[in-house]
Length: 272
Picture 1 (spheres, rainbow, N blue to C red):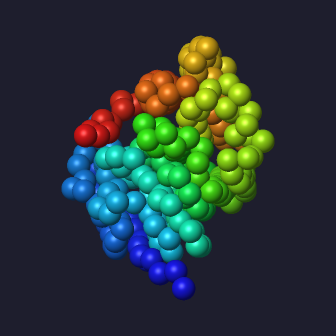
Picture 2 (spheres, rainbow, N blue to C red):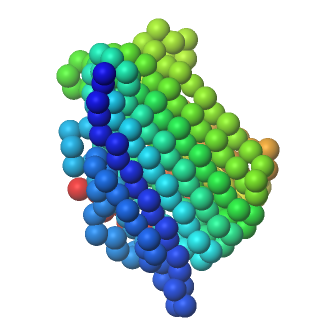
């Protein structure tokens, strides 16, 4: 029988009478730890830390994050997340974000790196009330490239569901193995392809906003960028890049364009 850690993060953020965001309730257990939160540009910045070497066989982690009305939260990580080689079973992450009307969630963790032989499943649910706003970013590396592990994982299973006002507006599913047609297509363009997915939910981003043209103009021979409107209330953006630096630069530029279009200043990530 495969044994592992059963970790969790429970975080509820609220706004005080001056509009400052604070943590009203928190609980976490290994392999999850929180660094000291701080305010930057009116947003509460919270770093989620995994103090272990990464996710191993049997590990189960659940994140439950809720924003009450008026709260503004940036969730990030100080470094890459990793799933190690797993011979039996898998490692799993389940995360649910709930965003109330009048609140803003910005979730941008560092790269996820599936090492050779990794088996990993991630389920993400984002629930945004009408009048709420959120930006959800995920970045995926092909593996430990410097060690010669490129698309050497055994299997990745990613699921994302996004609800706005109780209606599902996006559903994404993909199961990747080294032989998957999707990975074959990616490798046909970039031998060490890095991928990012971004969902933006906001009633204030119009189709005729100049930010979409500027985001499209980030396209280069070594970086592909595409964006499209969801059925209502949001946008999906995808980035495929030939390297990690190219991916990070493109995602940072996209994030900057979104913040500018919303008339907000970006809080600093302060990643070390």
